[in-house]
Amino acid sequence: MLFDTFNRQHNYLRISLTDKCNLRCFYCMPEEDYAFMPSSQVMQAEEIETLAKLFVGLGVDKIRLTGGEPLVRKDVARIIQALSQLPVTLTLTTNGIRLDQFLPLLKEAGVRSLNISLDTLQPEKFSLITRRNEFETVWKNIHAALAAGMHVKVNVVAMKNINEDEITAFVRWTKDTPVHVRFIELMPFDGNHWDSKNVVTYKQILQTIEQQYDVVKLKDELHDTTKKYIVPGHQGTFAVISTMTDAFCSTCNRMRLTADGKMKNCLFSKEETDLLSALRNGEDVAELIRQTILRKHASHGGQFAATMEAIHSETLQNRSMITIGG
Image (cartoon, rainbow, N blue to C red):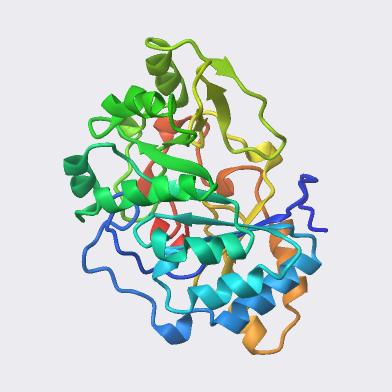
């Protein structure tokens, strides 16, 4: 088992398969001429499987595959099939563009839950945010996943003057569709020019929804990152991931492995441990994992100030979101 110095057990691993993506969302991948990692620097399929087995041996029982966009990786099917043989709950975060091509494989691999990113219900605004004209593809594939019996969570990064006017429209969508919308507070990463003034907070999201709907609070589980709600009579639910204003660090059970094999014990940690080089050099990777967990800070990688307004994003030391993994 992996425990940190705050007695938090870590059993959830997020593995980024690639930093490549077929969208260009400005809050994740701000530069159009972004330089992708060379293939020699990226974990190979057998290395991913080996590292995943090491984590499972240390108590991991849930693995989420992320990117970039994981489904653009050429050998993603091989990776999914290999990891599906491990005694874990296997899940995936995707932008949905190539999802229809992989639904049969995902079902065969035992994947029952998907996180799909969709920040707007308006095609024109989708093109503005993502710099690509793929709204109809994503919309179609979300409903294809629902029809295939998948538990679908839709990730919505809430941003002032961008999509805050659509919050109630997303909740309205849950009335007749069993989709689980998750509003995410905008977070600072390298290159995304984050400013606290652009964050739509948990309280603001909830107040906006309560102006039109009566809502009921649902029970949150121990390691949930979300605060879950339902509008009575709706098939779906909504939730808020309040990373910036009401964090959930005290029960964190998550670890991250970047596409180039660096372990991050927190999304915002500036420190990383190079597991891939250690694996290739025949070192004791399991011990490196244990030591990395023991260095985990109490919250936010030890980088954030007490209040969101006091954060200066230009002083934070981290990667861009696309190089960490969603």
